[in-house]
Image (cartoon, rainbow, N blue to C red; front, side, top):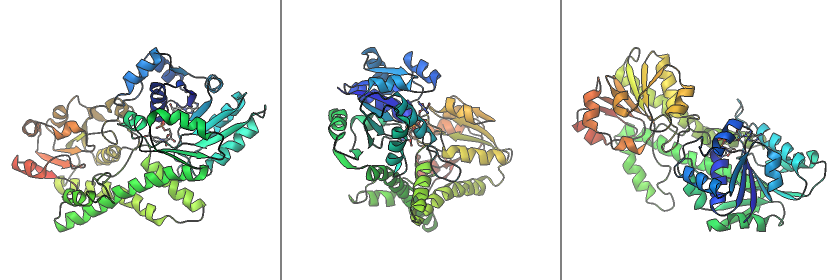
Length: 430
Ligand code: NAD
């Protein structure tokens, strides 16, 4: 059992804290959002993440998981202190590191004995050096410490599974001293552990996310060629994906990537590279292709509806991907804003993200089912691929719509079946 503190109790911090507690460690999760802390203490969780709530409840009851607003309480409790605060983008695409810096100062102020300080936030290469300098500067008692980089690879929507059964755990260290304790933290998860220097560990995370985004943009570029040539991108992706060197994951053509990670991490990597003297043209093109996917979808809407003004349009799927309520940089937002600007009336439905969507979308009518959203509309758009949409009662859907027009931005439905049922149906790359 390792005594652990996690600073930042968001998607990553809360799920990691809960899974560490589930694995038998003694965990204190810290957050400066006191409303969140109170909510968690009362056994409620502020995010939708499948399987998380029971683990939180169980481990709070068994006292292996606690919440506090005070960093000092977490630091004094822990042998290993994880930093899991936001690293949002600045307007120029570089990373705003002020949250990490602030937390590092506070950890330094609270340290009275040796600590392992682990960065789990996604950060630019060489952040470890900076965090070490800050801790040295602000720790008046000159206590010994080690900095570790331990990037997180969880996917929202299956974060619990990703944490309990990780493909690998990356541990970047500056000396051998923290390695045994870090291995002890991860021992219950039986995953391959990759030990590197700190810079390499930091780079692995940006290199991974950029590569996955590249796969998405690659298949989206292929989807444009499929549309122009009459080929089917699903068949192409299937044929490519069975090649073990390639793999099928992240080869889904659609509206492109969004969310709180890929857009910011790809921008960050381009910026980091530039700072280090390398023009990462490949990634710039990944970004361009991603932005183009929305343009291409809008073009399809215009080709189909001609005039958007005064049309009623249903949008199914608001979250940036299925199985999460995360609305950060969801492609649906871009599509909805553009349609609203042209004078369309939007009716929307999402299985889990409606509360978060209400906070950021104005002038949208939120509906309690796909069929209510579709009532009397001139067209229906699918913006994220929730399983629920694969099992829609399509005859019922058609019967409630004003016009049977469906633009599927995630290739959820079957074109042949849609045609047979009398829909005007357009999807991506097929
Ligand atoms: P989040 O916004 O959901 O959570 C961050 C939490 O930190 C919030 O609860 C916030 O209140 C808290 N916080 C901010 N400043 C604080 C402070 N000074 N003291 C204490 N708490 C503070 O963010 P997230 O999605 O969990 O992401 C955290 C980091 O992990 C980011 O660097 C992100 O890029 C990375 N990451 C995220 C994911 C993901 O899928 N969300 C996956 C891998 C890595």
